[in-house]
Image 1 (tube, rainbow, N blue to C red):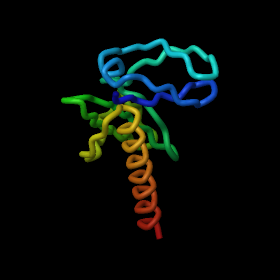
Image 2: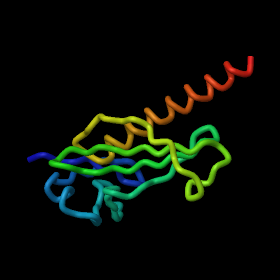
Image 3: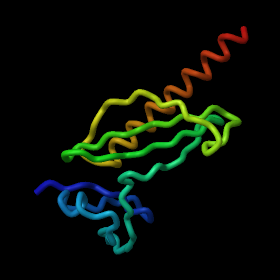
Image 4: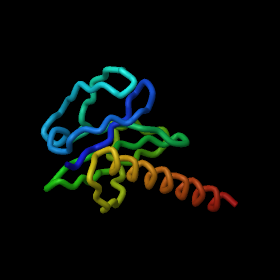
Length: 125
């Protein structure tokens, strides 16, 4: 049986959910081994907004044929996400879970922001 690991928001202990149950549900009520009960909402198709060093970015996980991919939308500092077109960052990896692909997309986005900040500082010299 293949499982997906979801961390408990209270104690970060992993809760292992059968992959077919995880894939079929948009929301699950789970209980960790330490007895904490929590609702887990699938990130499938929902854009979550994040910030890094003054830049905002949106991550959206999508699933196709059991593999997850992500869309990355990057907004320059001082722009409102709803008022401006985002810059779409190229991102082609896939992963077996939404959590894994979103973690990889977040790491790549933060690295790209750091690179862009470094470029702009280099231009000012």
